[in-house]
Amino acid sequence: MATSTSRTVFRSTRRRLLAAAPALGLAAAAAPSARAQGRKRVTRIIVPFAPGGGNDVFARQLAHSLNAMTQKDVIVENKPGAGGNLGTELVVRAAADSNTFLLGHTGTIAINPALYKNLSFNASTDLQPVAMFASSALLLVVPAASPVKSVAQLADALKAKNADLSYASSGAGTGGHLTAEMFLHALGARAVHAPYKGTAPALADVAGGQVDFSFSVIPAAMALVKAGKLRALAVTSAKRLALLPDVPTVAESGVSALAGFESTLTYGILAPKGVPQADVAQLGAEILKAASTPEFQSKLGIEGAEPLLGGAAEYARKVQEESRKWSEVVKFSGASV
Image 1 (cartoon, rainbow, N blue to C red):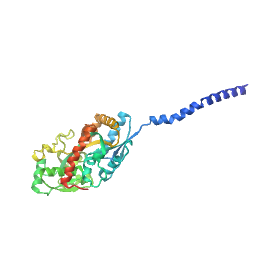
Image 2: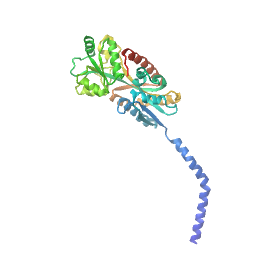
Image 3: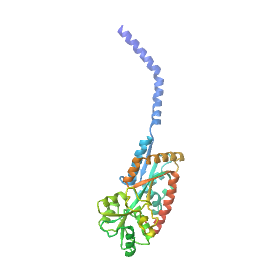
Image 4: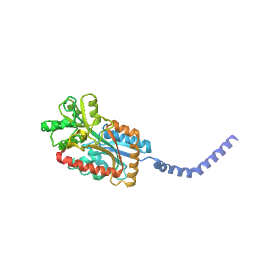
């Protein structure tokens, strides 16, 4: 009796499974499609410099904020080389549907096209701006033991010593180099350029008194100012910085030739040329929302930067303005790499 009952239950269960098989097969076939539809598409932000610098810090904070606010899958990839040109070209050549974007700043977008004579692309015209989110000034510093205590005194010393003074930069064609050339051009003065392979060795020799002054990125310079090895004379922004409220701007120096002097680096996101405008507008709105948060802006402040928020149109105008400005500086300075 028990055996007969077992056979009956088995046959009944088998019939139900066979009847359900077509539906189960359809569900199994549909499952990969549903998973594919639900999978996030990875958005890559290419940083054309090595990890650890301001560009990298800003990109990673932006990616973190976008991931938290939009549920996007945003990752940062560092592609350093050739003064930022290798990573920049990677984005220029990316397909319009590749979801690959560039963390751009003034050096790679506005300066490099004028500085590098044999580039096969022009970042200022071959990429489309998505949004800008930050601006960073430089800090004019002299050795702590220097008798120069103001921009006006430095201007007088430059004119009196007729190219006997020197200035350090983190390399030929960098923002610090070209800012110093713009400063000297405005004064009608000359000084010897001492290019270094990076900010740290450049500032070390200024602190040691081997070089007379430098226009440096703020975090590195401030560490030596606080250590009593450098003296901060001025910031190169149009207005004083919240981070350094007691440090005047170059334009505030009282030197008439420096009225209106400004040198800042703009940071933003750019896309390959063919990305649809609707996608650019959506990502731009998300970037501006993320960059407006107190968390993001506090991170900017730590790095010596300030918010500069603008959509695609505003960023495009900024790129054009900076390209004109820095191409002139490259031309009159004779800067080359």
